[in-house]
Length: 165
Ligand SMILES: [Zn+2]
Image 1 (cartoon, rainbow, N blue to C red):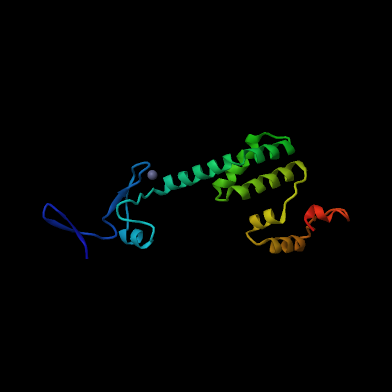
Image 2: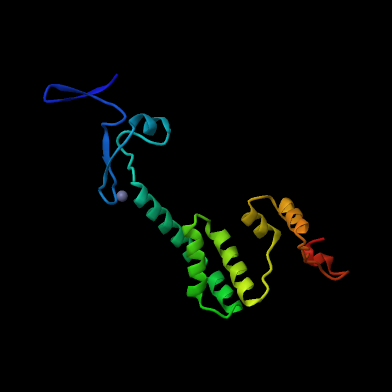
């Protein structure tokens, strides 16, 4: 058993009397030292524990930074659907708020715009798999079951070398 000493008094450490402050907003909360130390990636002196509000905000900022890397893709989606980059970004951001990753949200935006304006979008098996959370083969099988026949990219006879064959 460990305890703290304060002015000669012994203070036992429990799971409800050790506090920390969120480094972002300063909100005080109880921490369970046992839990932090046993998680393996915490240490007693250097671990900063964000409150859940700040943690969510922090995660969202990281996703928005990641979104910044996809500017040209967002612009090309906007052009195809004759809309603004801001509208595409709006759809993607609302997907991010629902907890999806950037890649899935971009696919979702293409799907949503395509459903609303009828301009067809083509999705690769890899993209379908990312959205469905399966491998590519399963994604293709699922789509075939749903009556979606996948298009295959191929080439003219004699030009197989283009595909490295
Ligand atoms: Zn906070």
